[in-house]
Image 1 (cartoon, rainbow, N blue to C red):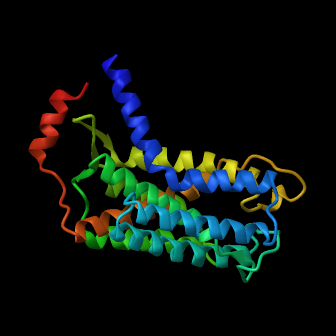
Image 2: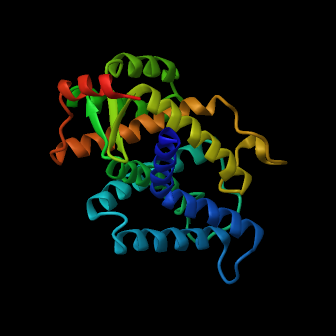
Length: 268
């Protein structure tokens, strides 16, 4: 019963951390099933995302520092969207006044929602890191992963080399979190894989409701290729590294070895 209670608490904190993504998915579903008047669908989605962001900050669910992080992710996501859409990787076929070079501005919020989840979960679960790599290693790796999303269209795709490098760099790194006053730990690389997999599931839901469209989904919806998990995995890593680095800059230091030794003895 204690384990089930802790699992429920963990699920509740995760659910509260996903408020922004849930609103986006709900908006995608509602605007797909019930066309809204006056404005095209993409413009309504942008308005809903802007309102949700305002509510999150106004209500205190997000801090101003977290808003800065989310804004950064919005810009990073838009830059990636502009490039990928114009390379034909996917498309936004519907009309919209808020489309720029074929990309609706609401799409940046889908990347921002990942950052929102990470920031919320970090604070709610009191996340700390153990054996975090040096700053220059983290920045270099995150930059290389992000650039590969662009350069692989013109040069060799090195995502698998980068994935192997991630395993090497973070082999000894742990993420430590708190649920109901109890501390738990997980290999950092495993957390990357889990978040990436669940985002792939979310991507299937999003494409089903017409958030965007892959070339093989033009005539009818089909499951997103499982290989996309690797892309989301790398994007999650970039997101996590940026958030973690900003937390380090704000003065949040990794915990000590003694804490991990204690956890090893007390983990259920």
